[in-house]
Amino acid sequence: MSTAVLGLVVMGASVISLEGQTPKVMLAEPPTPLLPELLRGGPDHDAGMGAPSWSGADAPVLVEDGIRRYERGGPQSPVAHGTVSGGTVIVYQFEDATGAAAAYDYLRKSGSTVVRSGVSVVVANLKLYPESAEAVLRTVEVGLPKVGGPKGMSPLLPTYLPGKGLEKGSERYALGPVGYQATGGVLPAEMIGFDKAAEVVTAKYEGKGTLTMLLYPTPQIAGDHGRQIEAEMNREGSGAGTVKLRREGPLVLLTTGAWSGAEAQRLVEGIHLRSEVTWNRAVPPEFHAEIRKTVSLLTSILVFCGLGALAAVILALFLGGGRAAIRVLQGKPAATEPEFLRIDLSGSAARIHTEGSGVEHGG
Image (cartoon, rainbow, N blue to C red):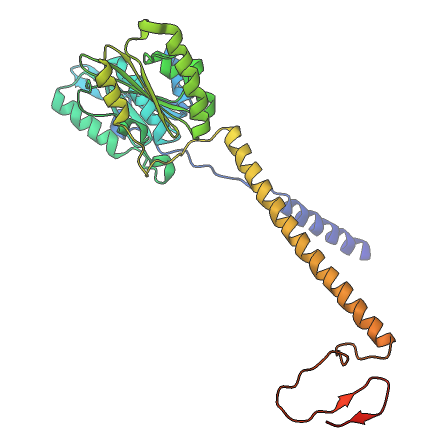
């Protein structure tokens, strides 16, 4: 009987143990589609993470700008014996609006319809009537993911471009050397300092030349690269056209091309940083190193002041306590000084006490 009971207990414990070891199933929801349902049919539909395999030469730029995922599809037009493709629509989603802005300026060279909305860029090549194509793009834009906070903020550097004489569509914003070279930058990419989190925008002005603006995390980094750019312009000489270089804090301005000297000077002197400039990209290690040095210095000063104050308190206690102890050993009160002279200005007679004698002298 006891053996049977023991067997039942062991079996019950085993069942409980097995139940406790049941693996937990974690359900991961797939990301929300970037395209509406009407565009996700057809043989060309594709979606995935990172840069698509069919993006070819665009892939390095998309990766440089921080692509997160993509989806490709297109409308299907009915015909007598089935459907025919009405073109393609591609949506690229990036980590932040800064990367989306850079990719947007790069992808505009494709000749397709390119639209940017927040952290997403839409590239459409539709074989539809204009009204139908616009309706499709509006439908796509409404369903795109909305991102708030710093990641949803558009870059401020392109907003510093003067509008007067600006050649429409010539603005090119870049975050890395591949995109900068692909969009026709005028400077050697390795000189700009993209490894220091630099941002660059270039623009052409009608009948004049090119304006290049570079923004760095700190004025020190801007100064270092500004001197390198100045040396490069001196090396190129007249081949660079009218060169005017000016730095204001972390902003570096450069004109090249067929400017007159007065126009170029007036242009670079008329651009100023505004107080709303923010930095939402990762700053380089040098910037963090300077912060750590400052914090270390302030910490050392506070520790030194604290130790000095503590030493002063200990010294005061030692000297004061030692003196009081000596007085007690001499039979005197620790906190009184009867031998000190006392001046009585009241005008009344006062008794004079002589230490060590019991004689009192009256006035």
